[in-house]
Length: 292
Image 1 (cartoon, one colour):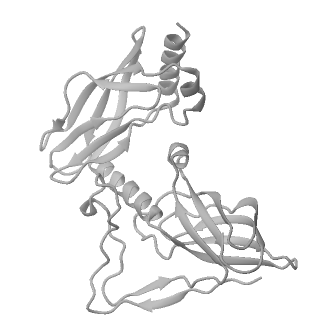
Image 2: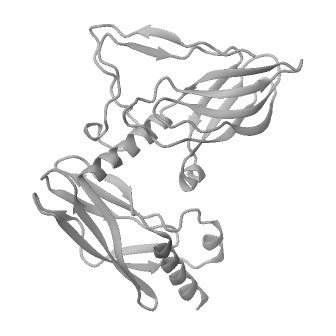
Image 3: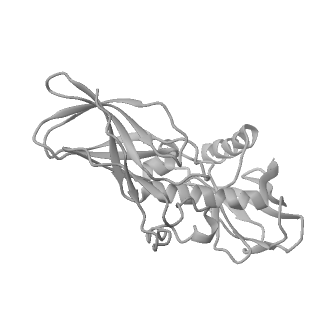
């Protein structure tokens, strides 16, 4: 077996931290994301290229809907075929998960997307060095464990978004309370409870899923005032779609992003937390409305 070694590259002492990727979502401000970029002069670990193989992390809509998964897009850039039998994300910014078994046969020039799960975000660490660990079977039967560098900014954006949400949740707790059936709707309240600090906290948007629409009982934005301890936002959940295609294909019917801004920072989407009983109440709403 062969394991590619890491290479240390020294950052020039006069250089500052790298700027956030220009493609990062506007809802994730750089000021809200904990910086794990080494200070000037500190060594930055960079993975060496692997001859004949390149890899890029991409996230399709289905990956975002499923959650906790990206595609490792592998390309055979060499002159020989090979087979990938396992894939694993490798980054200090994500908790390690066991390798995912696959059987992907590559011909020279061929590109194949390999669905790859990632673990919980570690906001105390940066994303780099970022790689994919691939178990590769060669035509002669040799098996190699390779650490292939991952290009693209997908994992940096995922990391930034999750860490921004964690910062918001360090300031306010978010809960859904008092869900109650109301015939063709379900009513309840979104509750923000201050955990730290005294800054105002603004709620500017509540998004729906493909099949359910949460409608605040009043206009947004609304604000948890500076120093105030609690904000309660009454919400009505409506069945948005009942067509069989939507009901059959929806991956996350009960995910509702709440956009929250602390102080003068940009808004950050945070999913409403729902327990099993609350999800069951919303499923009951779909069953009632869509059956009629």
